[in-house]
Image: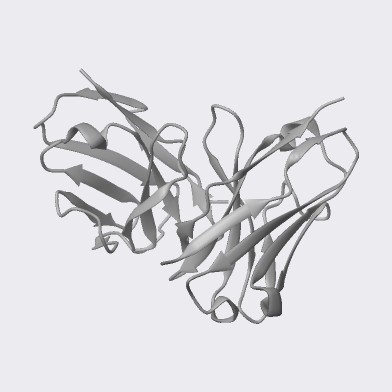
Length: 106
Length: 116
């Protein structure tokens, strides 16, 4: 099975900061990496699919990059509504979520 | 707009069964694969099962042989039959519409609690 490791597990940042969240796969997953945002008490929401494609309706301050085993989600300028937990997800071989990065207010 | 509404959750004893439903609207249900994903209280997300538009199925190892995913296209409804339930199956269960091989649009979830 492919393991997905996210880092850091908790990230403290301020409104306006540029932040980068990391996701590493235990083997090559090509481009098949999605990012989801989950706010407390809500269902997850798809932000980015297949590494760098912005889902409809998602603000352009979110972007994704990477290939193979190493991937990143970047938020260019944090907004108050962005403080949430972010999960990566691979669908190259079987289907696996990362353990999440909680983005909290500094 | 895509809308997914789960139902059927509740409190159930270990070893018993439960059937979850996911009512879909706002899209041509029969044309899309569908996923079930779960989240134990305070924990991360676990993918559970997938059913294709042609009703092919795939399961996570943790639920294989105990859970069954199915669909009724005439009723625009997805199902998850949960058998031989264990305490570790306690979670919020989400249904999601497939988007390019992964969960795209998600429902709000339904809680399943397995306890004596």
